[in-house]
Image (tube, rainbow, N blue to C red; front, side, top):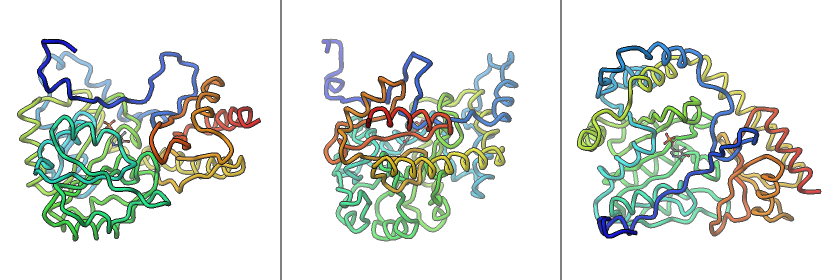
Length: 352
Ligand SMILES: *Cc1c(COP(=O)(O)O)cnc(C)c1O
């Protein structure tokens, strides 16, 4: 704290990201990165951007990327917004669409950046408890609100809300924005983007950090009707005109164009997940049904924090949240088959 700070800064409680260890040798299953590299076509497109043209500003509208996203989803480019990671896209959505005085609703167990943005933008919020099976109950969101946000599949549970349930949520809340954060949708869900044309209150965000393996590039998108997109553009153009650099625009667009690589790597992650779930169950774990590139699991006889520490001692890092209801769970990202085997071996030792 310092006398130089604006008083408001003293009230902020920032987000704490998962560890990015400086040690290379660790099997890193703690931040849901893709175990496979980005599309070779995306890498080539980025290399091609490394030229004297970097003296020039990038396209402030990132049109090349918006067109690639629009083509991929079969929507008009006017329905697409892009930003520096979906975290930035979410921040602009909170700022531009959720400041209505009424509380923002989101699940009690959910992405921990949501309450942070509420603090940053002065948005009241009301956590809504997941049911005893850690599922979202749509009926619980029928109360006065200034907006609704949830990840689908949810994080850190991995559980998917069916598209029919999302539609009921949209119909029950026609006067506020429902933001579906689809960071993990490509690992087993159906995108709500198919509903955008029918629901002016729907905004869908996605990231290239997980299924397109570009966490280091920082690119996220939003799809919604032009009205909602314009609110995001206004915020963006009042904050940073060039959130995406030339390399990011080229790489992200090429990643969307390369459907074959995307489909293949997602499929590999999905089959590894299904195999890992079966093996963890054999070791006695209870695993929530996952539609994501991670699983959320607990062992009835082992303390989760101790297990996480034991795994780390054997070179494997997973994520543990010290939070009510989930302190006995571990969130484990899906790795390559070799990494998953290293996890199982380490668990075998820890479980004795
Ligand atoms: C990873 C993640 C994001 C952030 O993605 P970036 O594009 O890397 O900022 C957003 N929401 C959820 C639920 C996530 O897990």
